[in-house]
Structure formats: structure tokens, C-alpha cells
Length: 203
Image 1: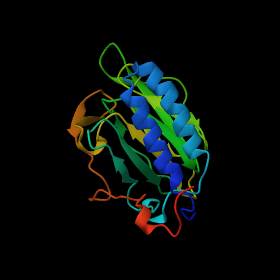
Image 2: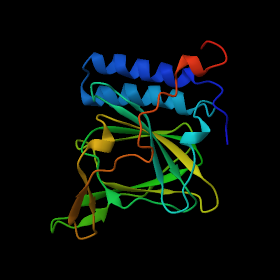
Image 3: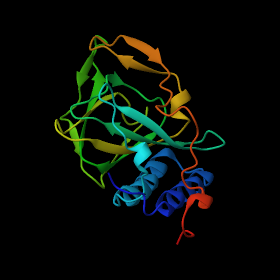
Image 4: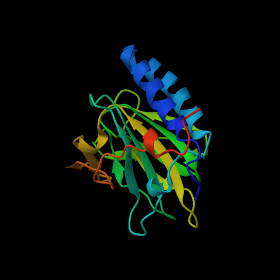
């Protein structure tokens, strides 16, 4: 595991994203500019504490890193054990996915005329430092899997809401859906950038 030597990176990202959202940009501009901010964050693998990078042998983990007090956005670390994957699902809000460690595949789906779901294009492979966007406007239904069968992968997700409280859906190939609210693997709201816990002030 990587020690969190530079927690100031996360603080800087959260501050910059909040400032961007305060400007009330159009979604396309938000995803473009927010994606650049997230790419900067995930280009360094030295800020995520080990406790938010722990895999579970039974299912992928979804650790809340930050929830905006006004519910405008949330930040989550997804920890994928070897070979783990999600069901086909949606988000119903805009989202950005940045690869921090390892690699993952994202397969998009679209509705066929009969209402069933069909794979849309080839799976997109994310490598460390790369970012992908989702939203109801540009494509919101996909399935994600760890690209590795022998190692853990970690991606950092940003959503335009408190995603653990959003009612959304998982899908069967025939297009039928089942609603769910995901919650988080950690049931509390962490404050992992608390200056009182650092040995020295942030740079």
C-alpha cells in the first residue's frame, strides 16, 4: 500500500472543484474542467490513506472521501479486488472517474428499439492518470470491472450529488431495472484532511 504522504493534494482538489461548481458552468464545461482537475489528482498516487484503499474479497468497496455540505458533489474511492466487477448500472447525475492505481474496464450500454440493453462500442480501459465522464446527457449506463485478475485496482469517482444517497438502478440485459441506494462501505463521514492529524502543516 501507498502511504498518504501528501494529503494536501486532496484538499486542493476539493477546493478547486467547489470553486468551479460555484461558477455554475454548463455541464460540458464542468466535465471538461473538472476532468482536468481530477486527472491532476490521480496522476499522483501518494495521497490516499490506506484505510480507504482496502479491498474486500467478496465485493468491490466504495469509500466516501468527501461529501459536500450542500450536496453538490461527493468524492469516493472505488477499490476493486482481483476480477471484481459491478452489475450494469446508472448514476442519474454527472460523474467523473479517474484511475489512481491498477486499471479498469468500463463498458457502456445503450437501449435497443425493443428496450433491451446492448453494448455500445468497445470497453474503455482506464490507466493511472486517465479520466472518463458519465452523465444522463452523454451516456450513463455502464458496467465496470477490474482489468486485473491478480491485483487490486483503485479509481477515484466524483459525482454531482451525494451518490450514496441517490436512488438509481441496476439493469438486466433485457432492460428491466431494479432501483437501489448504494450507501458507502464506510458508514461515517471521514475528515481525512484534518490538519490536527498531520505531523507538519500542508505545503
